[in-house]
Image (tube, rainbow, N blue to C red; front, side):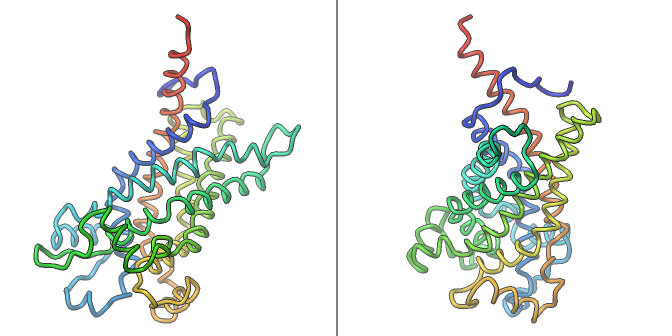
Length: 311
């Protein structure tokens, strides 16, 4: 057995929410530079004049990271980290922590196993709920990641995370904090279905056919498959979401207008800009998050059982 043994009692909803949020924050800390590189690659080509004036061109994952370190310093890889952690604590707690509860809600009474349709519905529901609650944190995170700082003399629009929330609300209205909610709901409904449903099914099959026991190798393989599936299906929506959130007021009429203009200007392959860092990030993020999540659930349940034990 690798890791903690499963607890005798199933984890409570509170344990799942706390475990999911904490595991997601831990995964974000380790993979955040890849996410920042992905954002820079996705918005490249949108403001070509500004990029040419700054003589900045991003090429590939490693090239983007090295360019950012050379021109902006190592700290630039973690631009928007505070908002990113705020996002994961609220976002993952809902979309991952509530997934099993919502799945049970959709499962017909008297049925032991949830079907694929039930799992997809649960994934879409928790993904949409999470975006609705956490969208302002995502807007601020993307704005920080997309901003290029070329030294002390460069313009810095936001003084910090809380100042960013206030500035966006003041300049664009409160609705500005929920900019891009529709493409983000679409993106995260797809991502959540791909991640949670794929992880759920792969893990279930691995255990059913006795290929693995319920431990680290099983969780690793299931999480890797979930990350690959999520990247393939969600990358186009993710690119549109990033472009739309980072756009100037009035630049695009809608997410659809953003997509059409991007394809017309840069070609269909623009929808998969940043695919490699997206996969590296989502693959690594899923492995770290799900493995940590499974262990945290067991650890938190063991602590809870010890507290409730009379001895």
